Image (cartoon, rainbow over all chains, first blue to last red; front, side, top):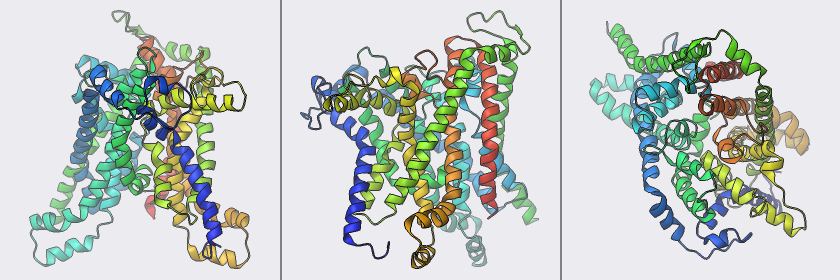
Length: 274
Length: 290
């Protein structure tokens, strides 16, 4: 059947698939549409054709200083990911290329740290942050995001590095390559795709992290998650402006996400599904 | 000697990650355990004393506790049901030959990348709002009363929002697993005259079993911690109707300033999460050996 799928069948499946896809995408689409409506239009009932104004985007910036939380999101997500990579690359490298009897246990243990519910350590983390003056600082939050994503980063890198054939290193050595040359010309080019995928997925995870970013910030270090959450109280809430802020908050990560479909499966299942 | 050097180097490379995670795991958890046995309220920080099991007893006898456990189970179970059944269905659909497959895939996975506060506020205001939401518009169009989703069905509404966020995840994973199904096996089954239902039950479903297990276990870990979606929509209410364990602990610790109570709740959350974790570790661990 699948092989000899008639055009008729294909058209049928296409119609159903597109309906499902558009339904699932609808809330995002409607947010984007609402962001270019005027406020009266936004609450005037279902309407897919906006007047196409961009004043909401301007207002969000001028009234609420949108650029600040946006930059905080960029700094926190990219910063914590790079920091995690710096710590994790050597670890993943050593486990992939010099595995010991304990390597598997260490990996499993790292994974288990990811299973600790965040809320379980809310009390001590909040108090520690308060006592060390880290509340509402980018530094504190970057460290936090680095730690919570570190196990995933190590795991992802490990599964990628493990696929680099060890024989290639031996061959390079036989050809008389020095350790430095080996690293620069043989290993790095083979490792870069895995590192890039890991970076991509973790920027996405850090960008969307919405527990610690809301708990540990108020204004100065608040990223977009906390900024948008502050719209939940009705005062000053206007849907078109909320939509504009939301569109800006999800657009960059949506686009990154589209590029990372494959890595997403791999990273979030800890290599269990590829 | 060279191997000895390599070993030392390998250990040194591993050390920073292990040490950091070790500290990250032990210090806060030990503190939580310690605080859970203390009478400690941030409103009265000078007056800290040993509480024994009082905090646990307090948490246990609070009617909100059982409500929150029940809500947590409903939330996790409801979202899992929707995402697994829906995920299998959509994955099967996307595995068929269709026009514009790439774009359909992108549209389907997009909700996963929407940050929780945005997802929740968009659903709350633009979709489910009883006055101006799209669902209210649809109801009125057909002559029905609009539904006050968050007032009447708060937990159900949150389940819908969270399921919407996680459906792409299960779909994507199940689709990936589906595509690794051996084409020849499928053809053989077709040649033998197995119809769609039989092929699904005896071939596809067993093949998907592992992926479904992984989806259930990983989602459960994240779903136990649902927080922002509740914060921006119902704030746990009305009453405790949409308060899950995570939210109850947050409320105890941050809004009632009860450090001891929040810590005791945290320990209970750890125990619950560990039960799930044990199963997940087994599933993932098995895969490592292959």
